[in-house]
Image (cartoon, rainbow, N blue to C red; front, top):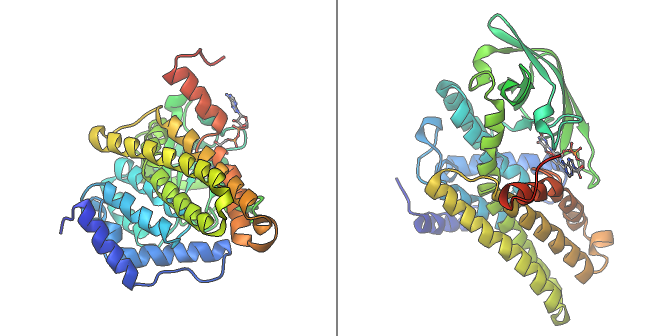
Amino acid sequence: MQLAPDEFRAKLVSWLDTHDLSPGNDHSFDAQVAQLSRVRKALFDADWMRYGWPTEVGGLGGPAVLRAILGEEVATRFLAEPGIYSMIEVLAPTMISYARPELAAQMVPRLLDGTEQWCQGFSEPGSGSDLASLSTRAEQRGDTWVINGQKVWTSLAQYASRCVLLTRTAPGHAGITAFFVDMDTPGITVRPLRTMHDVDEFAEVYFDDVVVPADRMLGQPGDGWKLAMDLLPYERSTCFWHRIAYLLATLDGLAGKADEADDLDLGAAYLAVHTARCRSHITQRTLAATGKVGAETSIDKVLLSTAEQQLFDTYRDLVPGAIEWTDPVLRSEYLYSKAATIYGGTAEIQRNIIARRLLGLGKEQ
Ligand SMILES: Cc1cc2nc3c(=O)[nH]c(=O)nc-3n(C[C@H](O)[C@H](O)[C@H](O)COP(=O)(O)OP(=O)(O)OC[C@H]3O[C@@H](n4cnc5c(N)ncnc54)[C@H](O)[C@@H]3O)c2cc1C
């Protein structure tokens, strides 16, 4: 059954009002990942998670905006941590575009229905902003490829059953090749890394003679850079929309705790988040109309990360002691907001892109 966006939201809201998916009081990362699986399963079983995805991968079709609405409802009700919830918005479209159709049909439903977590193995020590310099090697041996190297900052790697992995098969941008790798393949070692907000969110991942069947290549040899660039529209549209919804809900919570004298600071934080939301709305409409967005989404990234940090800085100022002493969940969010100007491309890199590609202000040295 096809649903128009308004109808979809109305039915979804009424379903969510009568099905309690609230998380428990355990705020550990293990509990957050378990809650994520629980929420995805319940939403998939009730079909909500299937709207907006192609029927070939277990979806019910319809526009991607239905996924944005679902993510917005999940985020504003604090049902799942928005960062890890939104990973489906990057990984599933990548599989749909690049995996063999049979592989996508087999695997994508496992991600959507919460059976599995997946991770994104792009960054390496020394290859973060300069991703194209990555050096994890993949060498062809008959019907297989053998992978050696190291990834770092791989979110959810210790929970993941699969990894969308970028490797080097030849020099240059055209020598980057992507694979869909089972994380239980012999030769893979995952070492969780603790963040400053005290969470093992990401990990180092080592690959020692890891044998991957050739039919797990995503696209053709050399398609890896294009795949990485094609992630951008998803990361910068629906994912951002979910996060902004979550920030607005957090702001509402703050408004309830602050007194009238704080209106100016609160107003400034609202303005920042709403500006990011307006911008994100334009991006989603552009994506829906043209199927692609590009360098201009660096503006969205700067607006969102700046608004997120401003919001939590305001929280710290207006509710004294909450972050430092009384509210461990808020403390965690506050500290994590500092990562917003790093993950998904640092603030400096985004500003370089805006200056060079959008404003024509000079070239890379
Ligand atoms: C919470 C979190 C989750 C993450 N999850 C994942 C994941 O799941 N998968 C994954 O692959 N990666 C992930 N990352 C890694 C992320 O993509 C990288 O941290 C990011 O791309 C920056 O790379 P880097 O850390 O190597 O820093 P570097 O590239 O070494 O940058 C260091 C500093 O130098 C600056 N800099 C670098 N080059 C320039 C330049 N040309 N001009 C001006 N300034 C410059 C940067 O802005 C930065 O301030 C995650 C990171 C974080 C924080």
